[in-house]
Length: 73
Image: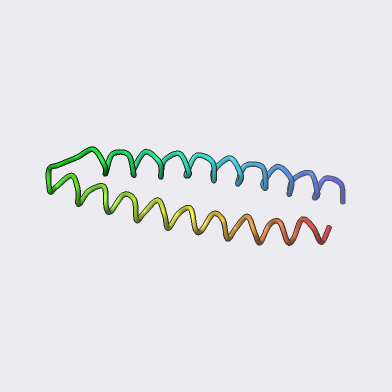
């Protein structure tokens, strides 16, 4: 059982790391969006912001699920 709990903890920590990286990517996408004037690049960064936001939302849901499961152990 300890091995299972250790593996869960490693997975959870990896997920938290991925959330942090995604948060940085979102900040970068917002920064890039704010600093462009070309209409094509504006569209590009709108898509990038939307994509990263969806990924961030997904990862947060996964962290909530894992947190609930980890709390049950």
